[in-house]
Image (cartoon, rainbow, N blue to C red; front, top):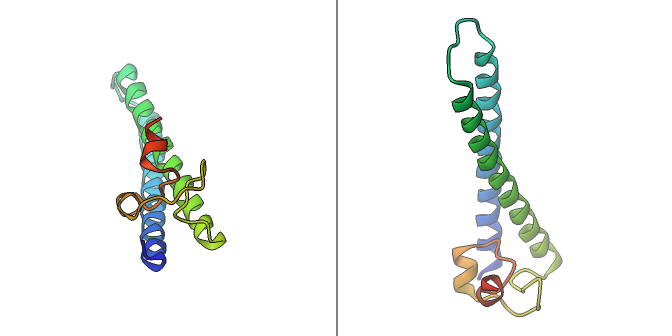
Amino acid sequence: MDLDIARQRLHDEHLALHELLLRSAHTRADEQSDQGELGDWSDSEESLTSQEEDDAVADGLRHRLISVHGALDRLEAGTYGRSLRSGDVIPDERLEADPAAELTAQEAAL
């Protein structure tokens, strides 16, 4: 995969992930402030489930952001496109599907 294209795709994803995390944090803050208002008769169990789902989504976004940062670091170090486990070349098709891929498809399947 062309390194400039990989860098641009990773940079774009980095920005998008940051935006999603910021929106998630703002939405969560708004929901928490709304819960404290008088007259709110919402089901607390439903609220907790929604909060847990939001937390899981935010955790997934943070995990992906860490992967993107790692890929950007590998680009700078000159090791991008090689498996972190074996050092084998990660095929272009895999990097095109996931520019932050850390392992070959075979290694990831294990």
